[in-house]
Image (cartoon, rainbow, N blue to C red):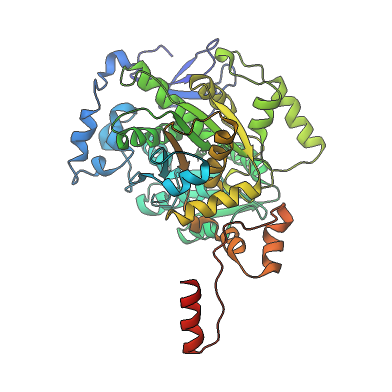
Length: 466
């Protein structure tokens, strides 16, 4: 196609740069097989020249598009007409200073911020992207949507299907690879759930196959419109900081959709002249699902301005197959060995002068306990960002007085098993759930106190521990 549309899909490879209509349903470039971006002809779109336009909209609380934390920034993801916009009230999330968690990380007071996405309708950041994906699906008249999921995407797809009644949701999960908290959402909201033999990577391969064969709309983050919605997490961070760019964004890394979206968001804002610098980006893998860390940190894989040589990735995946090595971490939301957005994440790391780290199960759970003690309950995957920030401060990569934003991707009730096991007085439960994963202690456990059904014992316990 000729580049005449105001919004279009474009191959991320500079050598190819093929463009396609937003009316086409694509998850990869038909010309070269690379990933796609949603791109805009900013010269013809009249983008905002300041952030004031968004502040004015926030004052119009009665306008559904204004109270959506995604569509409040419609001018920065203008692929759909306003009448096509789908929202169920996503994006009403908080950025808060947490000096308690900051002290744990090693930061000076007032310097660590937590962006908590657990307040979204389905309890995770996925709703930001799902609002944009459903909008695109509505534009093209899709009637069925599918995803592979470790849990959060399935919950988000299911609730958007239930509320909007636009599509029938179909969910692929791996055997035993989804928490009951997340699975219960998909089942309750009425989605068709198909459990296949294998893990997330197997489910992802099959859902792509089935979606292509049956013409079902795929809403995993390989869908470029999903990532358009996830860009708005960064817009809300900037909004909360008075439009000042922080020094660091620290995000968990699983399928690498968020890191990819964040890099794109900042690159576009800089191109539009709305910011004059970008923050540094840290992507944190769980050690049991550390593909990005292995490829980036140990095997030197880089974006190289779009000329990335993916041979190391191919060799690594072959090694995983030959060893039958599966992703394995308590942080189930990032339990992924083959991230579909690897290329886009490499690009984001280049744009944002990024770093990649891995953290252990012990580090994740200790960080999670500290986040919870600060009043923001998060699932284990979320806490990887805080554990990663702590590691980077200890290394001297992040300065103690720099402004750091850690992304908390999901609510604590998404995956309560690990929380209960960490704080339990039942050593058998601790060993079964956590000890088997190499967790040796619960450094910040808040254990219950057992007493008899006697007033004097209860009063004594309160006096002793209260």
